[in-house]
Image (cartoon, rainbow, N blue to C red; front, side, top):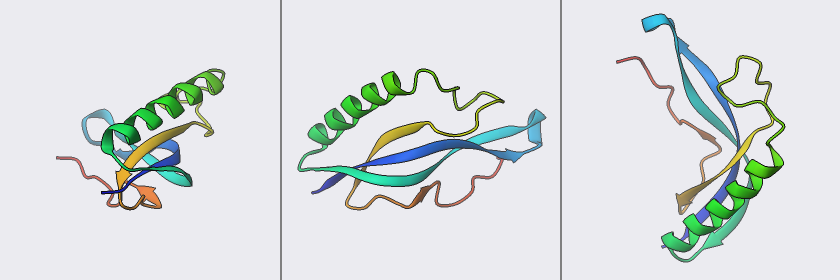
Length: 94
């Protein structure tokens, strides 16, 4: 099995007005960072990348802030192929 570590620019999108309003996480693929032969190795690489990103992004606002204007990134692990964006289907309020 092949695992991909991908870098995404993360954001939040408005889901709807139900229960006072709700939001969901989104991401746009920026680039592929690495390939890993095992799941353990892939998660170790992603964790290392996210620690570095946390350090580099500490001056940026959090994604859940009303004043967030983009620029936060996260490394995410996928099997075989990384989607160009997530979520693939817009969630709905249940």
